[in-house]
Image: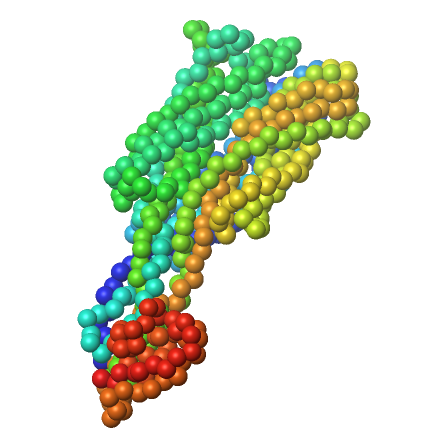
Length: 508
């Protein structure tokens, strides 16, 4: 006979998909007529864009495009650029088809090779990694003692973080940008759009989201002279996100990412390059956690019958937190054989972070790829890349596990030290999702063996000589007695034997 245990439950994070795949990019490009011939290729970049991601019939489908941007020098030593996009699609089978889920996606350019067959024809070979996670809820049951006079249970109160909500929303951002105090835009050389959550507050079934977007553009203001200009534009966006299950005290792990964006220059009789149109597709996702106290059964026995017990080990989160950190890094970039007369642009196209937890200290090992576009003493454009390695240690971090870490280079500034050296200064922000893990082995099933009734001793009391440190529970279990009766009979103050003593074991 199974005892009817009282059930409680929490929700844990479960991955229906956690994969990374490499997507090839192989294209042959012929420059359009409006582009000058290529004299020298300076930089070829690969920027994956994600347009849609959908789950249907146990399959995750992702569609997007691979945008290849080429920055080159024409035969007049002027800087030029050209962008070409080719579509891609990918499909993945899920372990299960969850009812409620979020899809986390990320991309990373692995390599790109560009070879000019002629001044107007290019062959591109490259690849990017597509990172995908489908996160859903998994319910884990815990049990507490039933109303049964013969069953004795030992319980422990544990505090666990339960995944109370999952939500995701995709939305578009359209912005008209006026080029007021700068020359009009003739041609965009490069662009970068960054997104940042400035405030994320939760109320009953709603998330109040405030965001900030930073757009940086390097452009040509005069095609004949090749004059370079920069435009930086910052704008906020606020939204109310529906999120069932979120409450005021929910701890949110929220993220905001730019899936894709396009910038169009308005060249007409009215604007003539003084107006830009930005269209971006944004993805917001959030996991919400709330703490919950659970009484779990760690041991059990019957005073009348032998019992069979079943345990189910569970790894869960006992505490969950999202921490923001920031740092400033300086480094000197040596140009080797080049001499710099003018810096056109300094930016970073990748930031890799590896977290290490050690003795309550969080160490972040970072590698940033610094890209410099400049002119030499002959006024000819050139391009170099350098990796900067650095680490940051944040002390007194009372967590034992890093669930996730992400970083963003908020700004890059520079100064020319001499003809061959440039000092760069990086302002970096980090978001670290931290937790304390806990492993418990609660009882999930207790069965009475009906044909194995325990034979009781005929004596009214049994004498037992206990050693210091023995546990009242263990003694009671050995004699099929009730712990409360043993404590009351011997006037004990705790469930531990504090010194050697003789105990009276009640047998009924």
